[in-house]
Length: 389
Image (cartoon, rainbow, N blue to C red):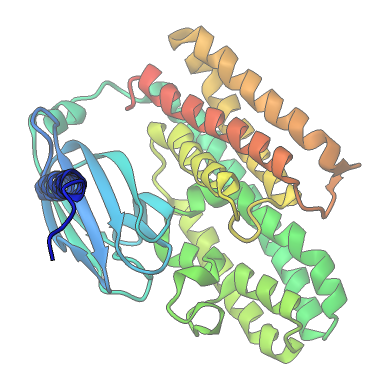
């Protein structure tokens, strides 16, 4: 049958459209593969790591010491985190990487061999080799840190004092669990977790303890049913789900043992000048990203935890202020102003000296997320202004 002549231009247009789509797909494929293979021309030390199944691709990476930008691509069906670990110490991390999405992070690395996590905490780890460079040699010749001796000593005292507060609060919580007083345990839980949040900025460098003390169920293969899911978040889940006190009691015993280990490590941790602002920057950024999400991570919008975050950040800013006021007075002023704005945003959530157990509405949650992002940026700029970044 002869086709109408008017259909020929239509066929040509359709074929042309299909060719454009195909060319676009080829261009996208080429660009994606080019990005995955290595850095763009002129970009120093850029690496793309793709998480597939239970492994990283590549699973073994070598970069020169100094700054490297990592792009983490999540090709699994679960939200995941990616960490660089020096033994049990977390050097840097990205959390809440949604399926099909990617996140980047730039980290300054010293020569040595590190582990990298590859999705779920149960998965095998990859390797990161950092070779010496001119930049790392310059870092070794950095001037004296005498100006930081006092602030670092005071910060360590703060950590140890707050760790004792955590231990006391956790013991009261566990005692209530073992006595079968679940309503009392529910009342005590927010204070216990708030105590941990005050020191989490530093405690999160101990990757093994952080996983046992505070990791969420989403980070385990079987979620809440995974035997490795323990600690404060497991108790929180059990109290909400109505678990039997006999089930939660042994979890409480493990929690107390891990807190004892945390106290020992905090007593001997080697704090560095860049940690004062650097630890705060990571914690504020993580919580900001969670609050900005359509569905924030469990507990991240707790007023008690946000108050603890404010107190932790304020302590770091207080210790850095005498040095920052000389190095960058404008940044010191902005840092204080942003923390004051955060404090003001929390005021309606307070009832006397305690925080009300309420959920943040969407508008307040987004506003707080924006404030936390600004404070995270202030912290990052502080290290740069002080010559520590």
